[in-house]
Image (tube, rainbow, N blue to C red; front, top):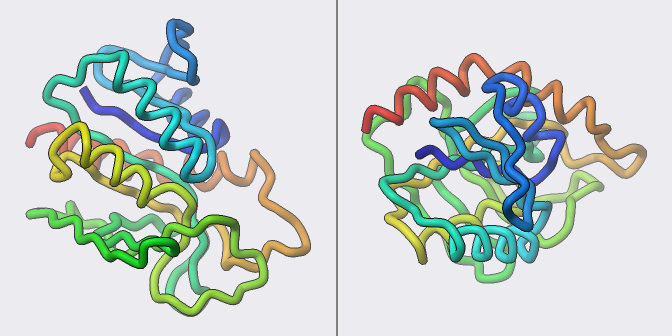
Length: 196
């Protein structure tokens, strides 16, 4: 089974539409599935990710699974483009300051980048570290590391902003569009890693 993990419903919706996933109302978090994919909408931030994933995986058997976090992230304007997708090979955390390397034998033609998980959104453009910024990846890593082999975790991040959102936040439609424009590449990636 491939578990797709998104924080936001707007990130999940284009994937649900693309794969025609059906809503499963048997749990306490939003779950959508078919015979290949199970998509979990965790909610944004570390606390929501921890509560959602631990509750779901405590009540559901995991057998030969892959976990793919797909979501938006902030980026540095000089290092990436809006809508650009990256396979994350390093994760750091603004609380623990620990850097985790995700080592893949194959990057499937995707660009690599690192992601820094932060506690609250960066909206003023002032972020000194290299790479992308999100609010979930490090906690997803911690939870998956407790329940399965970390080699089964893949993180895809799509640049949605340059961390200068003080004037206006992204709309659900904008988030949907960023994911949707990458769906063909996401589909190719999901099919490729399923063979491993």
